[in-house]
Length: 146
Image 1 (spheres, one colour):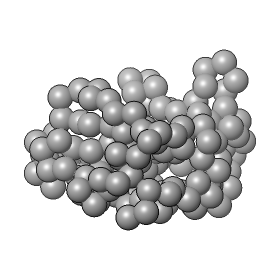
Image 2: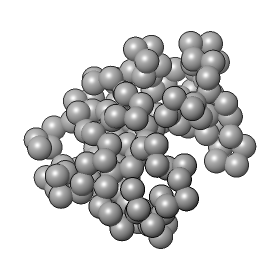
Image 3: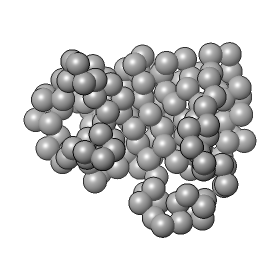
Image 4: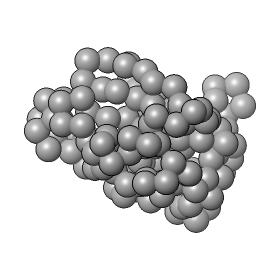
C-alpha cells in the first residue's frame, strides 16, 4: 500500500477511511505505520496505536494483528455521511444525525451505525471521528478471536 492517506476520502462506518480498510492486517499497512511522521503507542493490554501525521490513527489488536478502529484526527478533511466533519459543532452534528447518543462512561457520542465522535469540551466541536469493527462489542474481542 502507498503510505499516502487520502485525507478527503469519505468516512465509512464498518469499512474505513482515508483509503485504509478495517480488518487490514498490520503487515499490509507496514509501509504506512513505518512512515516518517508516525508515532506509535501502546495504550492498554491488547491494543497498539499508530498516529500518522495528525490525519488518522490506526488501532490494532495485538493478538490477531488486525485493524479494529480508525480515527480521523485534526487534519482529516473527509466527511461522515457526506455532511459531518472535524471542527463542526456537536449541536449541528446531532441535528444532521440524531442517532448519536452520549456515553457518559466512554465520554464519546456513539451511533449504532458504527461511529464514535469525540468532542472538544471547550468548543463543543467534533475533535475526532472513529469507525470500528462490529466485533468491538463481542466478548472475544480483547483476545483477538475475530
